[in-house]
Amino acid sequence: MKRVFSSVTDGRGFDLVLVGVPFTFLLALAGLPLLYNILMSFQEVDMFSLASVIRPFVGFKNYVDLFTEPETISILKNTVIFVVGSIAGQFLVGFSLALFFWINFPGASWLRGLFLVSWVMPGLVVGAIWNWILSGDFGVLNFLLQQTGLVNGNIFWRSDPNFSLWAVILANIWLGTSFNMILLATGLAAIPADLYEAAEMDGANAWQRFWTITLPMMRSTIGAIIALGLIFTLQQFDLFAAITDGGPNNSSNVAQYWAWDLSFRQYDFGKGATISVIMTVFVMFAATVYVRSTRHEVRG
Image (cartoon, rainbow, N blue to C red; front, side, top):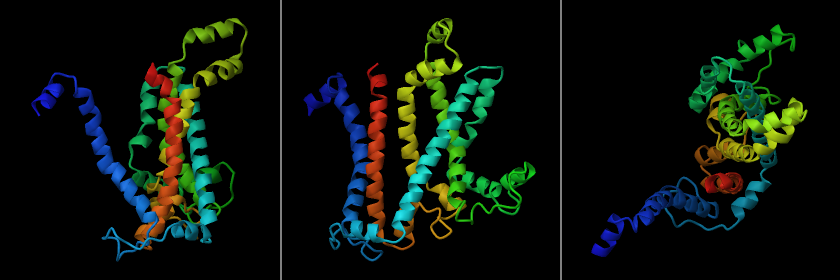
């Protein structure tokens, strides 16, 4: 024990302690619950058997039953639309704002800071705000659309099956735009200015400089943002609970909200865990993309 203690205090084993402590923490608070969730997906678990570890083993029955449910295809389709729409909207608006603030006009830093308000606000608060904005009777969005002549009557964003999912997408785009803007602005700031000066001297216009310099130099940053956006969007729950509650008739229901509904409303914890396992696979894929996108930055 004295040798072990001295190896830590004199620095030779300190690196092992630095790795071992967070690894133990992650294993206890993340690894074991993940394994427990995977185990539940192969068991029959209801509110009466939740407290016990030894439960009836059903193999892949939960997975088979899940994909035979009539609402599965529509919910998975909603999930894809929600993820793609949210990531695309957040990236396009965030990139536009990053390019706008790249000009660095007077007061740009203060104005840029105001956009961070959406990112630091809790999801339920954002959902409550967008509930007022998207209200069919007195909502701000309907008022603006009518004043500009784009629509003639009120649109019931939260209760109309044709608009309910897009209502949550709009709120999620607003929530995540500032995060995209900050990361993209950081990537833009890392591009050497002499590259643009040399390209301008060669006669390249603004679009050619953007296409041949900005986008290639931002490739790793864009890959990291898309991967992080996929992870954050797949775990988005608060907005659905606050705005549409997955309705009407599952028109705005997505996989992450369905997993909660199956587990804590219908008390079918086995199927809820099954959805979580499937989502974990996609999150691991996104995490792999993120690590590969930032690998050269870590090495540098």
